[in-house]
Image (cartoon, rainbow, N blue to C red; front, side):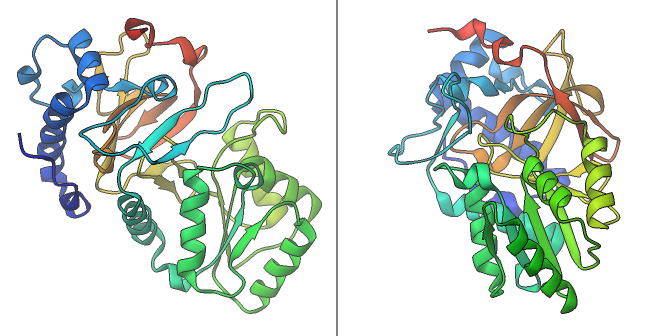
Length: 326
């Protein structure tokens, strides 16, 4: 079987998405030992797979205990999830970091236009304090690509950040403030203000720093304290090479090379294209690891393919993985 040509995915049409996904399924079944073993446990014959809803999705928890690799390449570069000393972090081996760069640059410009039109400010303290964060790499590259002299990262310098935002506001400069949820809430409480030219984007995550809040609570608090009409959001994870974005109300849209499905919580093989359930993700950019991933996020998919996320499954770390304990 010929290797899958990942360079074609960024121009994929909706009509061709299923075809490319099916081709990638057969490639990964042949070239990914962990995924093949999982498929053999869940389906009888890979040749019977005719629709994307039938393709087995690998439980995301396997990234914590297995080397997820499609094809042969040297294991040098990887992304690693955050965690505590009591948890096992996910590790996502990456063959080609330029592919990740291409994915997030094209997705960002698809939803927000040219990066050079923005001043980009990252408020990601928990992520900056560790290595191998895919989110930090993405924001760092967008900051450099913007070329604006005020673009950059902030740790806990909230007063300096407030002064910078006010200066950018006075210049009517389009600014993106992208931050982990707890850091945005801390900043907004300490320095409430009225922002007109700034887009505030939360990436999720309390990291044990604050009490858990619903998305509606977080967005309501941030809109009131920062004066913006809506809060944008980014949906990504260590185990993916692509991101979905929301421009308000928690409704996410995928780039053309990424698609979400939902599975029944009690029957993980019952997969649908719409409705409420646990989210499965097809990420064509993940050709070198696992394109078809069963997440632990509960959500709803709408008729147009957009989706929202309600939260995590209870006991998610132990669901689905017991079939393949080594």
